[in-house]
Image 1 (cartoon, helix red, strand yellow):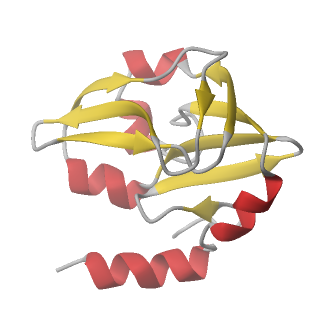
Image 2 (cartoon, one colour):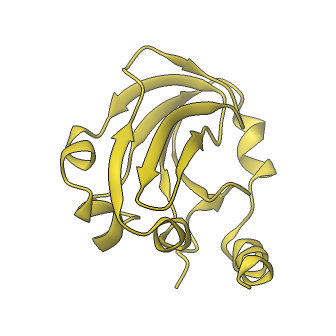
Length: 128
């Protein structure tokens, strides 16, 4: 079940707005598509990120893909636990599996992301 309190990008990142900070991770759909994750690189706090631009890399036995920022802003926190324990991504992608927190500089960008219903429709069209 796709959490309804989050917003979603077309590259399968989720965003949880909390005031002027957005917590970001990847969806369970993305985790399932990747398979066994073997490497995760996240940016350091202080790095500026741009909506839809790469902010890190995730690698699995199947592929290496960019993690794209769902919003423009500054990285204020990185979840070190998830870089050391990939099971957090598979077990709780919307809780302990969060990746970064971004201080938002363009709040209107949140509205450009999909809601849960739109994301579910989008992923159904991608599942072949």
